[in-house]
Image (cartoon, rainbow, N blue to C red):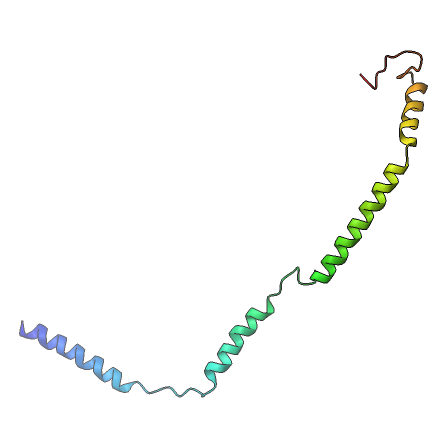
Length: 107
């Protein structure tokens, strides 16, 4: 029992001697600032891929789309020749007969 206590005490003493052998590390006073700058600089490198699509550009795109839709809608309303073209096509291929009320298109 006494011998195990002596071994434990020797280990404790060698541990304290190892602590005494450790020297303090001198760090430059601006080490923390430099480290923080490096860390935050890496975060700033990451950029949003949609950053170029600013609100001004979004508004301009929206206005262009609305104008194009209005123009297309007015052109569609103005052209009634579509129905005439379909009737001519149907008559030429025998799908629609103007004499009869039976039609393959309207069924």
